Image (cartoon, rainbow over all chains, first blue to last red; front, side):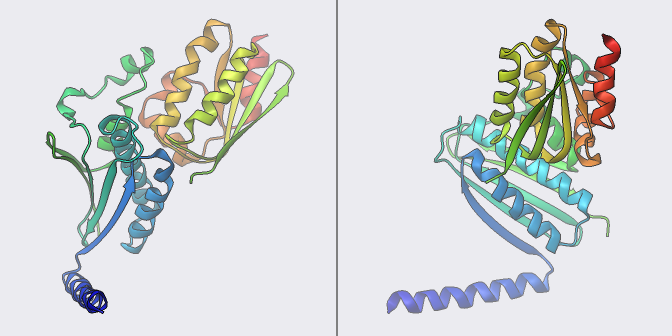
Length: 164
Length: 117
């Protein structure tokens, strides 16, 4: 019974929160997945659905889906070193001007400064494979920011400005 | 889970690989296996048909990088064909047209191999 009352309260609160954010035209959505590449497709669906609701163009949606896929793939392979049970939290936050995706993990920290943007011609000649993801993310999004608190969490923030 | 599969058909000395679905970090190993098996069987004249590929991420692009050297060392090539505009744009963004020949149709890619003979 206590649990039920708590649930009802939570429901009321969350409805109130939704109403508030709708008034401010500020929408937030959240997804939590395990660090497995098999989850990339449901992550892409989550981004696609919400970007659609937000009214983004097909090209914008495609760019964002790929950038988020690359960010998440990097987390799975590098932060969690392909361990399957790490947690990745994905939060979408948007208003009429900006669509932002935040990815948070608790794996190994990552300093993007240590990954230079590749000289693509040279890079391809050397048949290097890694590092292309970060390059794609920076090319496809308007802003890419990393915050790393070693031993605690890493956060990557991907933003796209909306032109409407 | 993302759906991806490949199918291979032989046309003379040319192997044509059809890609179907979503090529990402999860499904890239399927394409790796396809290329490995071609290379192990000394099939180095490879045309890849992208007509039915809906999506590619850098993990998928990496597979082409991983095999191109071995294939060319053996006198062959991996020629790419029939990409959608969306998929081509990703290849283009990463400078792949400098390294790979990309054709509008599978037929043109096959013809290029045949001209070489």
